Length: 311
Image (cartoon, rainbow, N blue to C red):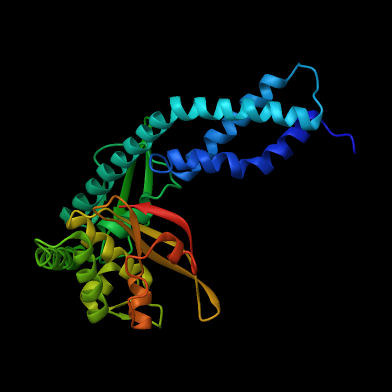
């Protein structure tokens, strides 16, 4: 066996074990914290485990791996018990910051005469976080928002944005919101699954897929009646949210017609507490109900998600 550093052997061994160990960990934590935080916790546990072994007698790979595996699992579970809720609280807190900032930016921009607005407060934002995508899904429905200019101030940033033709955008946003309210009102008294079916049926009947790939906004889908998948998926998020149904925006790839393409779809949580998957775009283009409220296993036969965006 080639000579290698003792920690190299251990890291290699744990790389092979990571899927098994984190699988159990994710079962108890996936509803609390996102995957990237789970990965950070795993790495911290691994570093702690290897650090604790430094300075001790080297162990043979088999016995060493067994012992270190026990130590890794112990450190992992300690971090899970003591850190999951802290991490979840931090993420929920950041989600609140995102909402406050985007609401400030949306309302302030549309209310301004010039269309240029800078948030009143400075927010602790991550430039690479999902808030830019959420601005398009959940707030600015008739334009592609941005560019965003970030002004550092203290520990946070004030966000500046300009909306051209703000009077027209203001009217379009009001038109979009009124349509959302109208459709949701028609689902009063319906179960969640019945309401989702109603929303799906309305979009399929009133929007066509844009094979020219020029329309992607929620407004394009709901008002103009033509969009690619992003428009369908965003409108479903907006309708479900207004109806009190938990809904997420998923993006990734879909295998369709022998080709792998970028795509977006939804998952929704029903009264049984379980997640179900909806792809209105493919239901529309295939003239079927094949992608309405299906299981994760069914959806993942041809869909591969790489991003989950909470509304």
